[in-house]
Image (cartoon, rainbow over all chains, first blue to last red; front, side, top):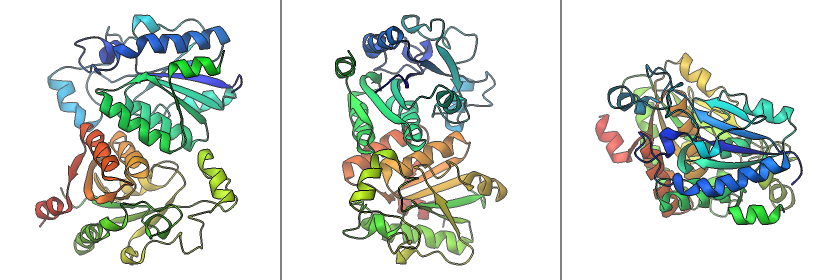
Length: 190
Length: 190
């Protein structure tokens, strides 16, 4: 672990986190205190922080096909400018942190994330946020594929259920990703 | 379902399938009869078939970092020209089928797969092979992200254990992927 470490916080937006939100992830709110501890560590260390968020056009033209009908007829989400699209108050980006939009599951797909990490000479990415089976996992697999050392802070990432989280951590651990708790992360990096 | 449907068979190479192979997936051999039925359906229908395989350079320069040490010091695999790199005999490609090399988990990452599917005007991809948590899943998530209708033939795809397969099918089903058995696939497409 050296200075070339970046924090990637995924989809911690009101529409995924708040109680009763249209895409509420049941396990999202419980991870906020841990995520805040990890974020504060990066802030104190002045290491790069990326707030990766989801955006969809209101007309449904860029949403995944299986989600489109519900998005158009029931309730939309992550539409730029809405309250639900915003990052939750507790994790509001501060000056010097990067806000980066993704339109797909992986934070790397069709985004400037890899380019920016290379420019910052980052070799290790630390991944947190929601949710395990989709954006967390797709970003981690692409991160490994692109040659990054990847760390998952297991209790700073959330899923719909504990069983889903556990099954995903099992698979992710099996491809050689460092899977540690917030406490372990902070102890290893005093 | 129309003519624009393609079969994507992933990593059914000796090094992943044969008993005692260096990267043997425990559930791989059991799926071969089902996979063969699905493949025969595509052959009879003259629909496009892609055999997507894994390749690594023998010096370890393009393998995922967490796998590199074992690959170099213990046993290499999927090195072009070796017996282990070859597609298993039962699924040997025939004339007109595409062999496509991937160097990462997803069949779409840095490959010509998306380009070729578009040229063939494919809208629906049917995914089979090994193994669930890694290449099967990464390919499916990218397929959904890129706008394809995705079908997973659940008993023509394999994992190390039934529990891993089941947990992955649960997550994959939750993003709107059609998850059906070989029997259901064949019944729906007489």
